[in-house]
Image (cartoon, rainbow, N blue to C red; front, side, top):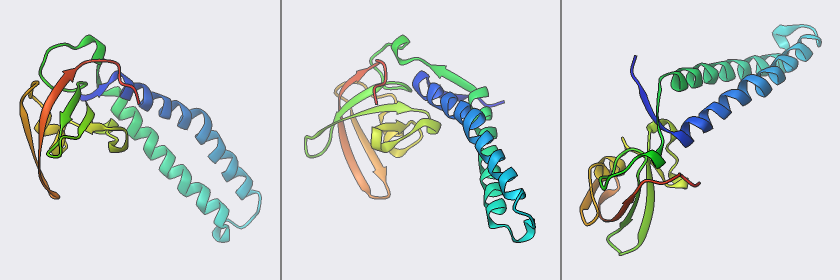
Length: 160
């Protein structure tokens, strides 16, 4: 069974989503199905079909979350050290325009570019892995090539 690397923050987020889907969403959907059944003929009951579709989606997501969290290899960034960028590292870079950006390298399951949580499998993540302060990371992506200078590599709690 293949392990899935997650930061401790990412693991906790997925566990919370799983708990919410099991304890809140699932009972709500079951109640909606029961209510729709009470309306009679199921073949023409749009509420029933919508609730069954929601149930299918929710159960699929529950299975996915159980699989991911069950195979998780949890990495706590506060227990990591070193000067080389790797999973759970917070990396500060300067781009071609000398603008600073800070990214956290995370597993694919927890990536969120709006929160600067960058997957280690993304073009940027792959370019940063293994780099140290002062190194240059060249990112080749569909939008073009970008150069980044590594300013700092740190291991600290992820704040989002």
